[in-house]
Image 1 (tube, rainbow, N blue to C red):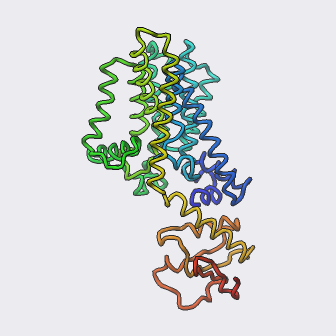
Image 2: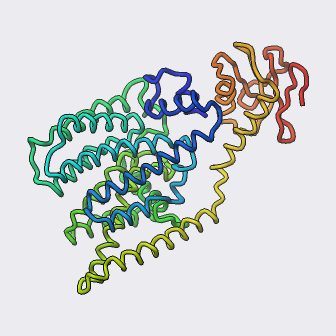
Image 3: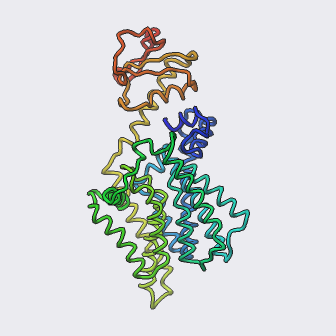
Length: 419
């Protein structure tokens, strides 16, 4: 509701993440307060991102087996389920789309033995700008492209103008996000703490998410695991594993010094994890069939089926033991309020003052305020809630409309009582 309200009520230039704001504004213009089209579009973007994951893994590994396993693991993760089931996480979906479109277009050109031309270069830059306009973690793109260039191509400084341009765009963008009145870091939830303790604690949290663990990971162990993955990649001299590690690390780095975050923030980096796992699985298959390569296709099919079964079972079990009321409860509350409000009062006069004597939302939430303004598409309405007032009013003369919430049902108590 907050994201939708700010996208609807403000100019896009004032929206923190304008590409996500454009999504909200366009969908609200088409679908209004109906959430179903929002979810359909988000799921469609998620399906498209599965295709991008396959393309990215295929370009890097040059292997259909690696790409198939990578996209199988990427297709769903129970700890990242907000990406697929919460419209508020559309920023991560859109960032992934534009980030990996830019990366794939660049790597595709390099795999063909040439640098991106002028037209492709401009398209890559536009996709990168859209990724930045979707979410801040997109700043990792120049690191990913440079890592690919160093590991897989003949390094040539004169051909790296595009990566340099992307990196130069990052600099003023990061400054704007961390300085000034509208800086994102003015919000304590986006204020970094650059310390080894925060670094280790967040890696422990993220590993708990990614490995679907029920017990917390020790921060020291988490750092050892991350370092160990890099050590393995270096020890076996696998450029693919080193690159996968750099992707998962670079796309997580902007988040490692921030306060607590849900698993959905790992969506961009998750491709690196699935690529790393897929490369390891295919390498194991090749080792097993090294003397009988004619069986590799059969073994690949068996491994794919086994991974699908085990990964699906693990995700299903995780969903069963955690009902996740936080994912569904707020949606039910929004539906309940919106449906009942329209039934009680189909329209308000401009500038009307509205008071809620009670509601099921928390005292720290502005959700009812957003709902009313969006539902009636009127930003002139004044919406007050008793539970958020320091001084409770003794009478209701300052409000034209007063709503109560009793027995899990909204009622209009002024003007008049309506059931």
